[in-house]
Amino acid sequence: MIVKESINFERGLDPKQAVDIGIFPRIINYARKKMSEGDSSWSSPTGWMWEIQEDKDLDDRTKKSWLLFLVNHKEYLRSKELLDKLFLGFGIDTSGSMSEAQNFERGLDPKQAMNVGLEQKIANFLRERTSDSPAMWISYLLTEEDAELDHETRKQWIEFLIKKPEYNNSLDENDFYELKKWGIQWIPYVKLPSDEIQYEFKNGKYFLSFDGWQSFSDLFDTDTRNLSKDFVEAVLSGENVEEYFEYDSVNFGDITEMTWFLKRLLAKGKIPALDDLKEKFIERGGDPETANNLEELFDEIESNDEYEDLHDAIRFAWTDSQEMADQDEAFKDLKNAIKNHFDINDEEIKWVEKPNNYSHFYAPISLNGIEKLFGCLALYDSDYKIKYYPPQYSYNGDISAEIFNDSLLNRLDEI
Image (cartoon, rainbow, N blue to C red; front, top):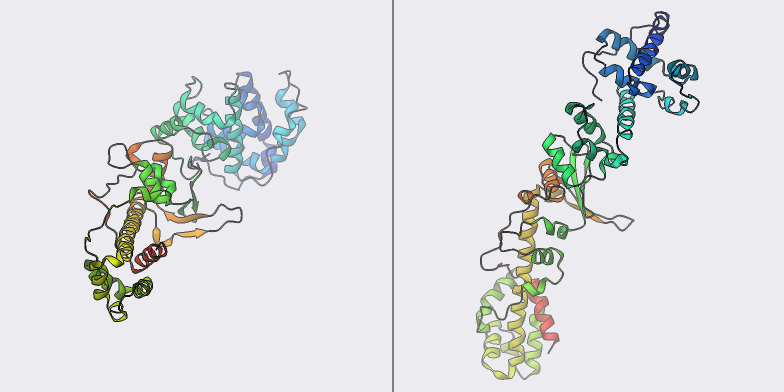
């Protein structure tokens, strides 16, 4: 509840003086008058702070003195004598009403006290009109018209309820659509409708937690593009990705053409598998001096059918390496598309180990990124999805010395 600026809680009025001039009896009499007029919201003392604040018949001076009195004298609201006076002539048993009055706990500041009253007022109002659980009250207020409730009050109530998990944890697509239409902000109070992606608002910043990059597979727009969900999921998860990168051959019909590329790789890293290749070449009767010269070695293997198995091992190792390099390139490309679209700060991303086995990535994200995630996961609006265009022909990843080394070792082990 937002306290109007015109009502200032100035600490200048002596409580005893307030009693002397009859503030409390006036509040009781006013509440009884409202109840006799059919306004049941005044029947709960826990709601008086709200009722006084919103009452259009009370002037600001009266509101200020009454509210200040109630803030300083909550003990009066625990009194059964108060309830007896309040309900005198209404035929209501007050013996069971004390628990409700006792909700006015000591220590609440005026705004907290008003919120307690507002929550009770909303509860009283809605329980008379719907059997829905409290988790469905926001949906009810968004969709059900009520002659006793104007639009502004409905919006104010929703903005109050949306901040509490017990009321906002069952919102569906229609609810989010209505909230957006009404201009009601639900971030950062409502969780994302996802088991794999969540966020939190901490120290003035938003942070995203997610199981892995494959958690975003469904958030790519695949309806009008040459892109399949299965492909995206396979690349980001690393599972069954090989079927999308199976090449029958490579650009080299002659393995001697590879030596230039291998020398470039050797300049950046070691390839121990070439030593294994030399050993197998020598075992088959090859010249040790030829084995120590990369160009002569590949030329001999290419031209001599006795080394056909070594020839095939080299060719297929290069093909395997290109497939792996392209897979890595596709992964990086898709990951960058995710980071750029949702404005995820990859420089500060970290892997968080949790004792309950829920380990996850954790990274800063912008408010705009959170809004896009809600657009995808809550509103199911394709406009918020990632617009990604794969390469026209194929990915062209760079083969590293490490990748070629592993591929060649695997192929030589099969001989």
